[in-house]
Image 1: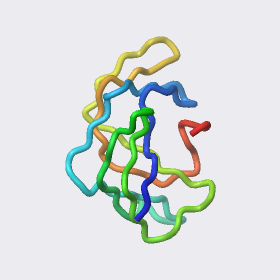
Image 2: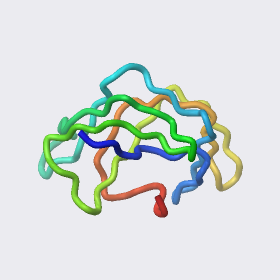
Image 3: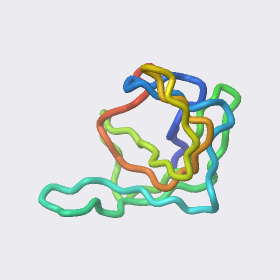
Length: 113
């Protein structure tokens, strides 16, 4: 297992979202991690994330256990539910959301992280 950043509160994403500080919640452990599989209709279960914590710098981290090693260009992306949002022009402000699952992806919403 290794500790990974899964989201960053208080820092805008490349696609126009901002998760407010303290907005994210998680309900119990573990949270599933999925990945797209070539030729598969649905994502495949790849692992789990546990022991989430909010760091002082706004990063949300978790202990991650995967069935395979992550590639250099792969990151974890959060899927949220039970969200409270406000649309502020080009910015979608997320005031509350619960982490539902994680997805292994090559896109990363916070490029400087």
